[in-house]
Length: 575
Image (cartoon, rainbow, N blue to C red):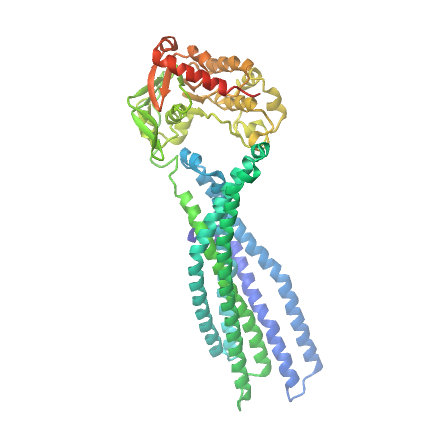
């Protein structure tokens, strides 16, 4: 938060100065109407003759001060809002950029609904905290100074100090209540985040739920989340009643104290202030008391968002993929070599991949990784792509550990196409190529994959719901075709593609990447013979490898072949 405030002061200095000047002017102008009202009352009660012109001028001044205040108030709001929003906007852009730098595995482990909610709440928390500091805390400090001077001028410095002391006691009592409710806020936030994640998952599966007429059963978990959040939120809201009671008590005691002081002063033989000044003090103090209670309300809101701020800061502190230790370049060779040394990958204590000896890949070699579903093929491919931080130090290109290679060189050398196509909304260059310029040979690939209509005419909708699964799969292949790397890794490149186009897809991949290090995870048994080498996996381990013509006749591989054919039948494409 200190960084955010410092950024606002540094990058928006003129805006901050203008805002501060406007606040001071408004605070001074706010004192004018009560002062003029006091002058009018004293003039009316004066024993000496008061000219009507004087009273009229005082009245006009009273109205004019209100008009100026009304005109300046929107300007203050505009300047305060602009200062806060400009600062938060730039910080938000920076935060999202930082989150995009995190390790690849973080994007797989984050629950999308939970993660999005944490980011939104975190950004909102910083906005609320900065708003509190600028519009309430900073403004009240300026008002405290202005009103202290006004009380000193009117001879009421003692009562001002008394009210300030009572205000400190009120703030301390409110602080105690707010600290007590903090654990309940954390609980409510946790239930709200869980509710957001569950709601996202339920609505994502909404079409399937309706097809099965399973709404009552499928929404049980969601309804339970609503119930848990409602209970926690009730406790948090109830605690606001105690704060409101403290607010009423503070205002009552303070105004009562001022009234008692004023009455005693007037009943004394020699009053120190006039009736008009008493009215002015009472009016000014009332506004000041309300602003002190606003400080408590702002502090309550501030405390409520501290947990969200901490959660966002935790996300921002996670390890970056492009950390400072990665600065090495990849040595150039005529034919590069990719080596994965022995490693183990686990997920929640369960072994997903266990490599007992080094596996080597040559750039001018095509390799298929096959095996039944759940054999660890995709996990191995992600390890070969360097996406898993736990295995990156065991992976090397041309004898240089990938963990030391700078992130840009890493991603240029190891190009990876995941099994599930992912796009952003928009036209082809933005949604598929993600803003990169098309290469000269891309147009031919688009024609061969029968995608000209989508590429030239159609905008992809959110989630690419306006194209078929086969079209989405073929589109996803274009990223690596447009920008090939030293090694090009595809996870099930022919999955979901209609049978008449499968051979065409394999032909295009082999023509494009045969000399560029083609590594494919695939269940497509019919095309395994086209690869220079086939790696067969089962239960997270490599059980055999070599040319498919040799492997297919081995008994263990023949047994797995039945599983592969079953998988292919289950995964028959839907155009």
